[in-house]
Image (tube, rainbow over all chains, first blue to last red; front, side, top):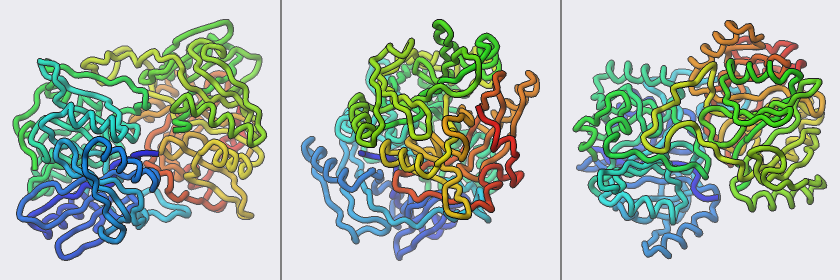
Length: 302
Length: 303
């Protein structure tokens, strides 16, 4: 019951051809559908129609992000709860969005449009369901098996974190407090991992990055090789986070949207105690090896 | 709601001191309590009091295993479902089944295994501070897996037992190996969105095939194999890879002959995902993909 995991991130791009080339050849995602102004992509091990949707626009940014709920009835329950909290909910009927059935959409206190969906078009993973091999043939690029999480900005992190926990039943795994004790980063999960979504202080509605899962650190190194070969701008890494304990590389798609590949972490139970990072340890919290946060990482967003 | 994940296993060992030395120094678990003829251990990143209990006994094998449930109401709900299915559970208040034990519903599954459903086990922390923690404690020894992962059991009627775990306890089937006549030889069941928390393989009722601990990386399996070789721990198989679960594993035996595994990899499983099926002809690849065949020892040796 309730929210299972991140389903898809919907971004905008100024050049769909460039985006398609990058996300299929360098990231190694599968293009599952293409319309005049949109691309739908999935990772090889994902069974849903898409985990990334890219809409052509004159500005690079974030349209919305969607989480999958366990049961259809969860949509009505969350619609009731979000409305009871005082926020408007839009029902998006089946047939109006590609790759999925009915959904609900609402605006978060951080200004982001969030969507909840249960009924998704299942296109299947690349492996058969009888006697599968271990990996599909002819994977190209980084080829992560699935999307993992996203990080977005919020002017008032405590306000949106409270909404996520009180209304949507997310659980706070870790937080960073500034010198005044004010929450400036909040990590929230539903899928029993360090985060499915995180909020960091910054402009409302902005996207910091979305991230793909890799199975181990060797794959992170291999991803760095592929990024370097293709001339992709690496923001930072391979390195490690204090928060989440994950291993990472950050890099930019050709239009400036930040991507990440991520592995590691831990498995928090729902009763996991929240870990707190203080201002004097902010560098290590974000980049454990460097101990400082680079200016670009702290300020560039889309 | 319902069962979250595997919580713990209670394993019999004839020589408690020997087993403790192995589990703390080679595997690298942490001893949290010892009472009478039982020792309680946890993996370093676990917050709960124990994930492995060693019970001194004249023989080896499995006494019981436990699953953690999300809320205390789940115990009542699952207890009612067990009764309705004709299995009479016993209820034990927190602390009654030993140090650290939570509120427990205990029953005997149709496979002959004693199973505990637990809520509220004592929480002892993972050895890291809750403020500005380093990624790991600095005094870990041996293989030091961060947590328990899954358990593999044997039973005579895999079809019937699998149906029981799905229908009564809400487990979901991720993969199965089918015999040519269509019956289930091996089934993989999950509650935690991983390839398996529990698996059954055809064999004697009540038998124990192995308990597995999670490691983060393939490199950890190589380090585990190094440690086995150095300490003279008999390696059963691996480091290798499974077709079923797509995980990577290393199997070895504790000094009493109970099989252990270090495991990594796998995938995320949604509750409505379709299971993967392996045919009898492909069973070798399903279990050990690289060799394409299963040693008779792996199929027959259990405790």
